[in-house]
Image 1 (tube, rainbow, N blue to C red):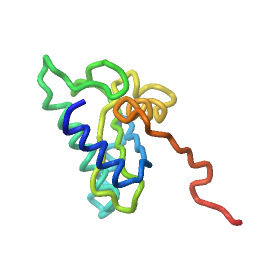
Image 2 (cartoon, helix red, strand yellow; image 1 turned 90 degrees about the horizontal axis):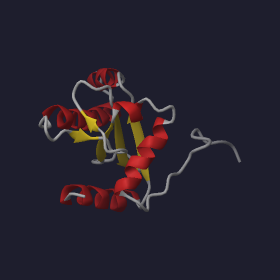
Image 3 (cartoon, rainbow, N blue to C red; image 1 turned 90 degrees about the vertical axis):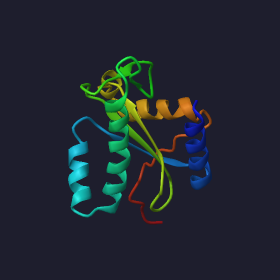
Image 4 (cartoon, one colour; image 1 turned 180 degrees about the horizontal axis):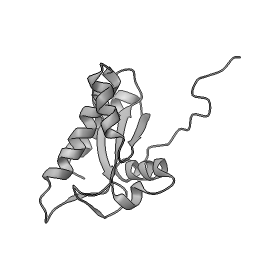
Length: 140
């Protein structure tokens, strides 16, 4: 793990108290996210900025040293249909997070969220996934 990645994981742990939100952007969904950002959505702008940095890392990677899938050892190249994972501290208006890519094969998995969680556990082994069964809440 690089020093930069260790620092990013440490910031996530500190900012979130150990809890993070994982957002998966499927192939083809980035365009809509960018449109929402252009229409003024602050959340979409924050996510689009992170996602576009992940895309830039894939596009700018040397041919002999391509970007790697966050979940498996496959290379991710600019012409592949890959997904993007964004891990953000579970806070209001997070200022930073971790972006990674999932190769074409992992992105095609029917349980893409599980692939994203597996990718995060590779860099943050003690992370614990939390499943929201009633995201809108309810009445007591």
